[in-house]
Structures are given as structure tokens and as C-alpha cells.
Length: 353
Ligand SMILES: *[C@@H]1O[C@H](CO)[C@@H](O)[C@H](O)[C@H]1NC(C)=O
Ligand SMILES: *[C@@H]1O[C@H](CO)[C@@H](O)[C@H](O)[C@H]1NC(C)=O
Ligand SMILES: *[C@@H]1O[C@H](CO)[C@@H](O)[C@H](O)[C@H]1NC(C)=O
Ligand SMILES: *[C@@H]1O[C@H](CO)[C@@H](O)[C@H](O)[C@H]1NC(C)=O
Image (cartoon, rainbow, N blue to C red; front, side, top):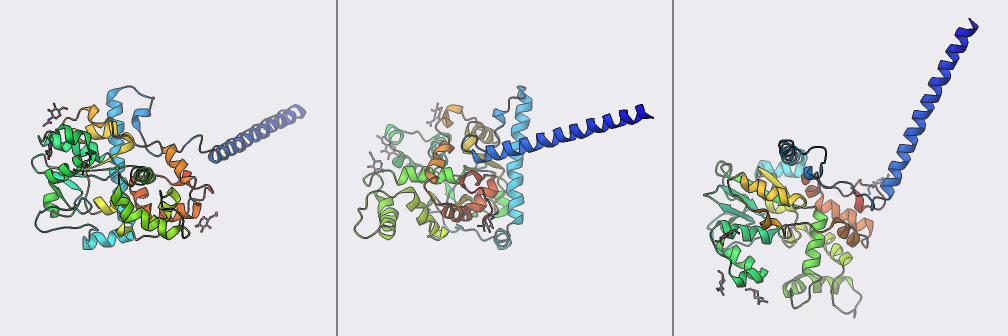
């Protein structure tokens, strides 16, 4: 009796100590987690699922299956978000596109006609400035058998003008649904804030002589508005740029910072492929191979995103309230394409009203 009792109590002690051990482990894991979250500059949350970084398998078939699963999940995410967003739902019912354009095909601004189409190759490609658009246009000129001479090769502005002229461009809603469904429809995106920083570096950090249009149309008026009287108008700062964005109607945005959804209308056009600049090296050749076009990887060697850590650096000088406002403008882009805002909010509160 005594022995049985002692055995039982020993068991109880064992159980209690192991439970305490498990509890302590959980507490430790939880606090490590929190510590990691606070030090998120050290370890960034993953923005894009990149199967090529997965080291658990080397079998090419496995790898290809993983990429296909990733691409399928991108498409599925767009469908889910489009189904759930009320404004999008309304626009879908009425098929109202933000940049719809019909009528005769004369020259059309790239803001209104961002889709390059090739009827023979049944290819429908929505391009966006700051998302490898130069490489894309070069590639389309090449597959359209238009050679790129020295002038075009050395002058990006001239290249864009020539490509905009030479390639057939339409608005996403130009074709009726039955026609559009014959095409293989591609669009490319990147982290919305990486794109903003990239646009800022390109169009606002350049000198007045290099980008006079942007100074006349945007930077000078903004600097006049936000700076005390008499301050010199030299270069706009990144927080001032963000201020401009949060105080301007989205429909008046330049195409370099207009949201992806307003340009390519992914809720109205069922894209077959959503590419990301973060995985450009795999996405571009894969997408074009789907329509039987081989694109050598070196075409896409320039197509890489800015370092995400650089974007964080630019945003570090922007007040959190402004970042929240900016996020609410680009929220649909974040949700449609599965990007995260979390590491941009110092408070860690990712709820945005
Ligand atoms: C297209 O690119 C390929 C490979 O880079 C090149 O061999 C070919 O000459 C180019 N075609 C034209 C029309 O420039
Ligand atoms: C290069 O091509 C562009 C557009 O096709 C043309 O306007 C220009 O004259 C060409 N330049 C030379 C040096 O051939
Ligand atoms: C580049 O091309 C544009 C448009 O054709 C032209 O206005 C500009 O002067 C060119 N720039 C250089 C450096 O040649
Ligand atoms: C997070 O931010 C939202 C919107 O600004 C606010 O309504 C909410 O109370 C905040 N939550 C916490 C836990 O601070």
C-alpha cells in the first residue's frame, strides 16, 4: 500500500515537472518571438514566397511543382480578394474600368493603354513603370522583329518612345470578354512601397535638367505648398513626396505611382499569370514559355527589385500616421498580391482604418 502510494506520487511529481518544463519552454519561445518581432530589421518577414530559396529538395520536378503551386496561389489570391472587396464587386458588375478606353486605335497614353498585345502570339501583357518596364519593352521589340539601334540602346527615354509607338497597346478593357479569353494574360508587380521608393529615386532624386517634366508638374508645386515661404526649391524629400501622395486623389496620380489595380484592372481581367519582380529570374522566362516564346535569362538580368532594406530606410523618416494613410491608398495592391505592411509600422499595429 505504502509502496504503491509512493510510486503514484513519484509519477505525479514527474508529470507536474514535465508540464512545468513544457510551460517554461512555451514562455521562452513566446518571448523569443516577441524579441524577434521587435528586432524585425534584423530578420525581415518574408514578403514573397520564392521556391528557389527552398533547400529541402533538389529534384527539378519537385521544384517546378513548387513554382506552379506558387503561381496558382497568386491567381487564387487575386480571385479571393476581388470577390471580397465591395467596391471591386460593384465595378465588376458594371464592368467599369478606371482606365477604360475604346474607339479608334490612334496613339494612346501609356497610362490609359498599358497592355501590350500580340494577336499572333495571343499575348496580352500589362506593364507598369518601375516594374522592369524597360526590359519588357526591349523584349517585345525584339520578339516583334524590331531591331534596337545604338541610339535606342543608350537612351532610355528614346527607347520608351519608340516602343510606345511601335508596339500595339490597348486598355485592359478594350476587348470584349470572349476575345480577351483567347489571350494568355500576364501582369507583373512588386512590393508597392519598393515601387514608390524606386519612382522617387528615379524621378525626384534626379536633377531638374534630367526630369524637367516632373519638377514642373509635381515637385515644384508640392515644395511651394509644404515649405515655409522663402525656402529654396531644390529637391523634394521623401516625406514630402509621401505627403503629396496622401493629399492627392488617386485618380490624379502619375502612372509611375498609380496603384497596380487601377492600371491593369486585375479584378476585371482574369490574368493567367501574375509575375513578381522579386522572383523575376524565374517568372519572366516561365510566363513567356507558356506562349511558346523562349526568353534567355540574360534579358532579365536588369530586372531586379531594389533592396527592401533600402525602402525601409526611406520610410524610417516618414511618420507612422502618414505610412498608415499611404497604406490605405495602396491597400488593395498589398492584398491582391500578398505583400505585407507590418515591418513599416514601428508600433507593430497593422490594423488600418
Ligand atoms: C533578338 O534577340 C536575339 C538574342 O538576344 C538576337 O539574336 C536577335 O538578333 C534579336 N532580334 C532583333 C530583331 O533585334
Ligand atoms: C534608331 O531607331 C529610331 C527608332 O526606330 C530612329 O528614330 C533613329 O533614327 C534610329 N537611329 C539611327 C542612328 O539609326
Ligand atoms: C534621349 O531621347 C530623347 C527623346 O528622343 C531626347 O529628347 C533626348 O535629348 C535624348 N537624350 C540624350 C542624352 O541624347
Ligand atoms: C491599431 O490602430 C487602429 C487604427 O489606427 C486603432 O483603431 C486600434 O485601436 C489600434 N490598436 C491597438 C492595439 O493599438
